[in-house]
Length: 138
Image (cartoon, rainbow, N blue to C red):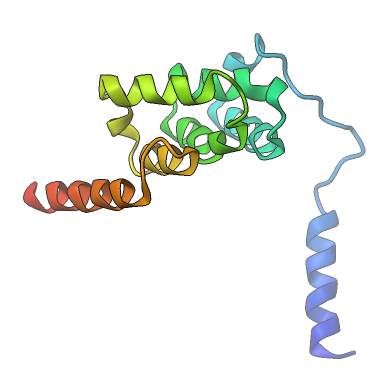
C-alpha cells in the first residue's frame, strides 16, 4: 500500500466518522435567531453560498440584528452573492452612510467593494486607514 493510499484512506475514514443518516433541515427565519451562534453561522454559510434570493432575509437578519460578530462576518463575506436582490445595495449603503458598518471591517468594506458601492481604491484606502489607527493605539 502506497503512502498516498494510506493518507487517502485516512481522509475518507475521517469524512465518514461522525456522519449520521438523519438529514438536517434548514430553520425558518423565525427559528433562526434561537439557534446557537455556531449553528447560525453554519446556516449563513450554507444559505449565503447558494446565492438564492429567497435566503436574503437570513443574511439581512445576520448583518443588521445578529449579536454574534462571527455570524455578521459570515453574512458580510457572502452578501455580494445577493447583489440582484433589490434591498442588498440599499441596506449596505445605509449602513455605510450611518457609519455603523465600520465596526465590522474589513468585511464591511469588502462587501461594499464586491457590490461596486465603493471602488477597489477606496477599499484599499480603508484598510490602510484602519491599519494606521490600529498602530496609533499602541
